[in-house]
Picture 1 (spheres, protein in one colour):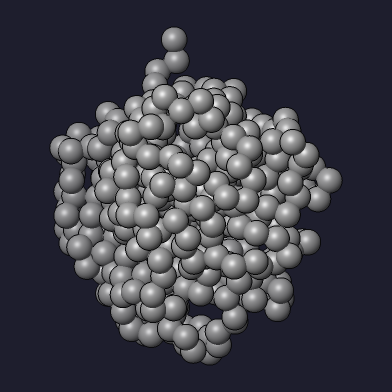
Picture 2 (cartoon, helix red, strand yellow):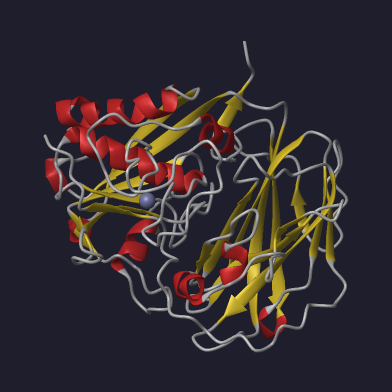
Length: 409
Ligand SMILES: [Zn+2]
């Protein structure tokens, strides 16, 4: 089958919002919430620190802050004392459904500024303002772009040019209504991934079927085309040391065969968000198969959407708890497998090598940008042809808390 150029792979639910006015640039000055993470014992002060139950892997710690105030649209700083063997930090904030949130500040013990409202040396032009509701975080050294209604997320590092080091880090959450910043409140889930630099890992997948493409939980385990699609996805991830692990097969209601694209983050109802909320697994990635997503837009058709970059890692039941794959546009199993791999890449923290806005590329040095380089898995259109991931992209994926790292042999 020929390369299908028109099939777009949506980055996340956050993009393409109109600019919002931000007149209040005052920094938050209230004392920070402190969360101390030590090697053996936690000493929580204002947060619930869950040290014993460390999630799906032995080197992952979960911290939950049940309530963090965001007065006038900017939270106080939350401080984290990160351990000696820290690999990455993931922060997910959840709040009111019609308020947009972002992790918009992240600073390290040596004064490193990874995410900022006004990153140094960056000019925020109107293109970026139209592309990102929180343009400063989007243009920061560690891009923060899961900035959406009800939910924000950040993986750091999400490119090899920045690092999360041991010591006292701090972050802040922003909240925005349709017009301006507003007072809100969020819960915060923090994942701290630890251990030696990983090169091998496992990714569990939870498949959810609407009946699109004739696929159901009962028939897909033995379905030749479905398994061909899995093999296509597996080829991308095996190449960088990630094995596809446990699979589960689930049916979801057939009314979700056609879903909207959920692009307006402040819209009240979204069938895509309702579908994502059916992602009830707290390991791996929930993956939903539908017939179509949205209407024709951007001169093409949407082949898939991820719940964020990163998505709400290991958090079931949110409006972003998964990735969706459309089977109706290019039913070639090679293309479907490509979309499965691509959207999972977003969910784990990878951006497009080249956005449709010309000047916006990923922050990974060893990927080719430009529209002539369609052979990267994270190029924004699907191909059944050869494609792959770079070493820099692999470096990021291995830092996702969703990937269960394994010791090198
Ligand atoms: Zn994409």
